Length: 198
Image (cartoon, helix red, strand yellow):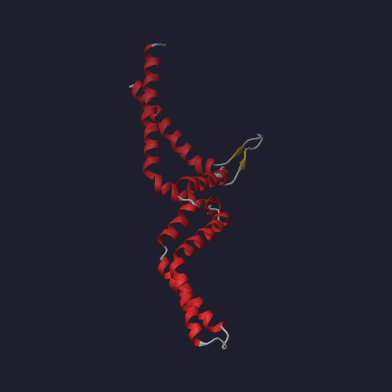
């Protein structure tokens, strides 16, 4: 009977230790000074929120999705023929408008025809080249890791806690139960040691 009581006490201690440890990951949100000591109590995640946000931003940028990958995808999926057609119509419209009226219409037609054929021949390569140049500017000016970091830092911490608990509720429950099981066996071993060794 004593052995069972010690095992149950061990299970309760193990379970409670893990429950408290999980709570202390998130709470208290704001630092609380312990009177008479230099110690400050604050949850691990709120205390390291800025570092965690920075790490997540870096992982997303380096491992999951980079600005280069986004830009490459945009250039790859871009309808180059439609872009060339749009550029051609704009340039032809400007050429028609800006060409002096003194130029005979036959020459106008020849000039515009030459412009159209030049754009058709070189348009797609020009669009790709322009796209790449713009992409380099975009890559230099947009920092995905910083955007993610700022977004996480701007989140209300209670919202982050709710999201984390919702996503990992089963895993956290298993950790609590595992603490109880391990505590039970530790209590059992202690009981055996107390009863039969001492």
